[in-house]
Image (tube, rainbow, N blue to C red; front, side):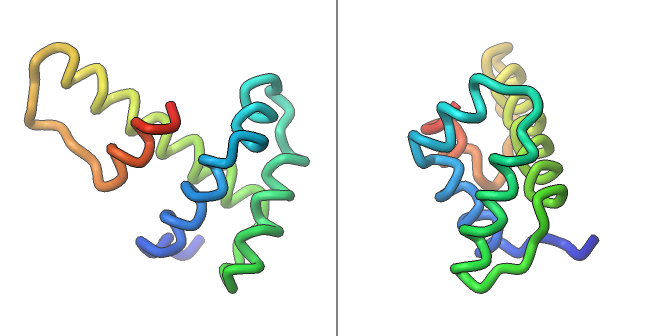
Length: 91
């Protein structure tokens, strides 16, 4: 798919930081319905992404965050990512 812009990722994180969304994501593996909601909310920002794209981006961000976090916990400062602080506040 086409690359996510910084604004698109920020919007995704903003929706993700919603307590309601977080609670739904915590308690489930089959989360298509949640990501359909997320995609619908992105649409309101004028961002056209389907639920699969949202879920994939969510998983990738989470994965990248965990890698950076464990590198930092191990004392390495070389690893970083763009949205670390935003994700750190959520995760």
